[in-house]
Image (cartoon, rainbow, N blue to C red; front, side, top):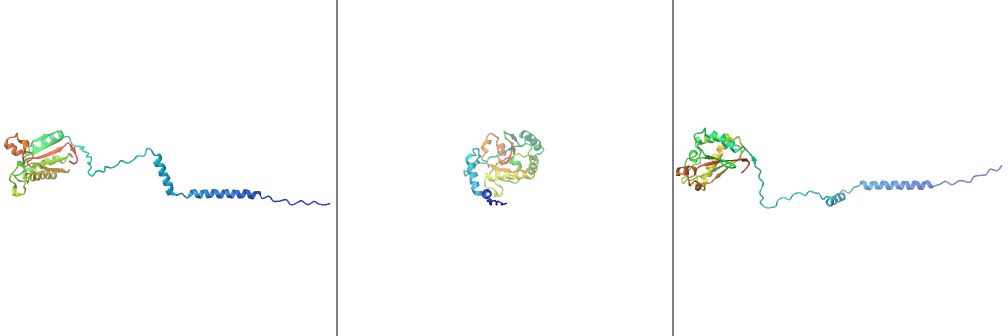
Length: 233
């Protein structure tokens, strides 16, 4: 019996086409991932800044600083001890000292002025405090050491002769007296800065209505001025 031989069946290569496409796709995918993983930072920042400037309508711009050559600084003053209360305390204190117990205390809207008669504190033409004056100022400074109110001292002088030729004008003498009183108050315990001012005899005209003896005494006074606020003058 004759056996029929089967013809060799051909092997299909279609799977190679599918495999090639798959490899190509994978290669493309990994190339795309690699290209995205390498970020150009400078280009990215430029893009972000451009978009921010375009769409950020609520952007807060810093206020421009003054460019003038001279600018006035704002001064904040804090309230200090009430002057009504302070006047009562000081009046009680100075009554204990024979030298300054009759010193005028003038209360104004925003300041308290204690007028210390120069004839009781200094010799004529001198800015050297006597021993009794030092004791009196130590008593007054004991009150001021407990306050933060701004304090200034104004000196006055209406004299023609100056001790040992140390001073050549009323202005120099009045300023030296103001500084001497301010230094004594600081030694007594007042820790804040004291502004000392000398007026010489420039304000003697305001004393015209006084008797001659009173006018002479008041024209050589030293005023201790206490403000209702604290801080620098």
